[in-house]
Image (cartoon, rainbow, N blue to C red; front, side):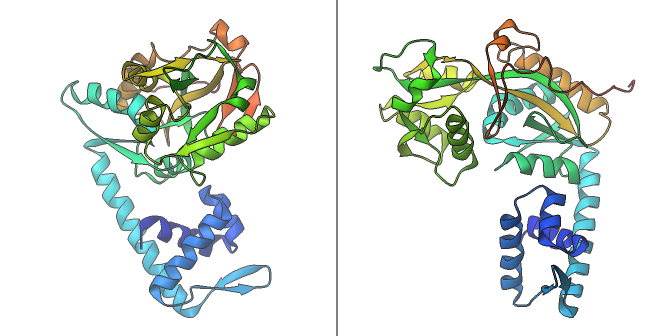
Length: 321
């Protein structure tokens, strides 16, 4: 049993259907259904029964939903107390390493403030944690959901890491990826789906040579000659220093990256955003960079437009300290 299951349970009770509940918490309906059914199995009782096109809460399920609401309310109150002293930041592992970790390091050495960096599995988890208050700041590919404040940091260029002994043109024609053995974090991983769907939008059917669920193992496989994989920024430079080759892609593949918050940024959040902008200045393309005129803008598994828009989202107005 976990808090996510309890949140899905309450959302389902409130929405009346699992489809609407999944939309309200921004997850796929099958994922929500599996989580709810797994919780019912763990509890050994039925919380929801089908009723027409919707569902209803069973008598014994009503008590479970009420307990779940109390637990979640207590967790939210606990998070509110914690937030007074600690700036909690959340990101998926790649952005946590690329942006979150160095920014948190600078933040805590400024006036000796406290921060916590939480790594989550999927971008939707970043959104959920910021929405429900478990994190005050999220680092996320843009565009962000319309109900959240977002500040665009710039554009992150995806590059291709390859075994050093390979001889590839730089820049490397994206269409040539059809003939390159690629690596993968695993067919069930959202990163695999994003890259695969993105390449298929170009008409490319990728060939996967090997899989590794750990990002460090993927880099190791590149360095050992197993295949190529995609990277960016500091992580790409570290891989090259460790023995990998690297080429840029033609056209460049970019994604907008930003900082998201649930409400008006307070002083600590504004300071964190300023530090994040400083940390990413050298690694992200700024809005208006002429290279963007040739780039393809990717968001998750979708090629959104080419070239990218001039900006992804206007920064929110910052209240005076």
